[in-house]
Amino acid sequence: MKTAAIIEARMTSTRLPGKILRPILNRPTLELLIERLGRARTLDQIIVATTDNKTDDPVEDLTKRLGVGCFRGSEDDVLDRVLKAAHKYNVDTIVEITGDCPLIDPELVDVLVGIFRNKSYDYVSNVLTRTYPRGLDTQVFSTKALEEVNRLTQDPVDHEHVSYYIHEHPETFRLYNLESDLPKKFWDIRLTVDTIEDFTLINAIFEELYPANPAFSTKDILALLEEKKDFLNINRHIQQKKVR
Picture: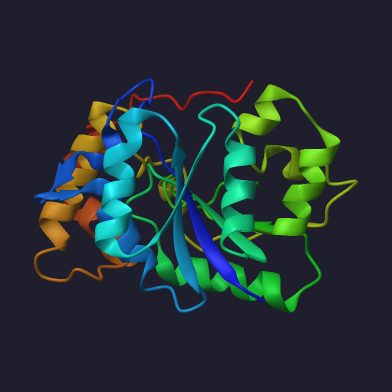
């Protein structure tokens, strides 16, 4: 049974175009995300699912340089893009990651994949009830489950937000949400890149932690934010876009 992280990434983000290749410490943001995912022991492969737009040629070039998988497909039908990526690389279990999460936690990925493998769930994540900072979002489900979603719905919202239909239909799919033991003050902080303010914070975190320890953990990030409390003011006012 092959398990792969499939990263949804494109250059034409509406709020911060080109964010996935913005440099942090002279390296593209997406490259740093892939590096962190590479430390997850449960992943057999990392695949970037990007679009067939000319603007995403540099994304494919990056995947070739890094030696990771790449699939190019529809910009708007992200579900179709991810599903076809899974089919191309014969993936049984999909770990869905978005390209705006360069601080993804490989240990958390391993925990969620472990729960998925050992329990009878169709979907395992840490996003149904948020007790982790936004930006550590990890969702695990089977390719078969995504095939079923593709058969059940043609709603554009469901096809833009790949696993949305799954966790909106607990009567059809068996769901599990992992809750953290983090203090509540950390639950709603933003460690994702959606705006220039978000990027500024992420860049500052990497500059502080990466040079001394490229494998820095979520615990290290939160300790830094406790020490440098002004960091959180950088993007505290940013509101997450609603799905509907």
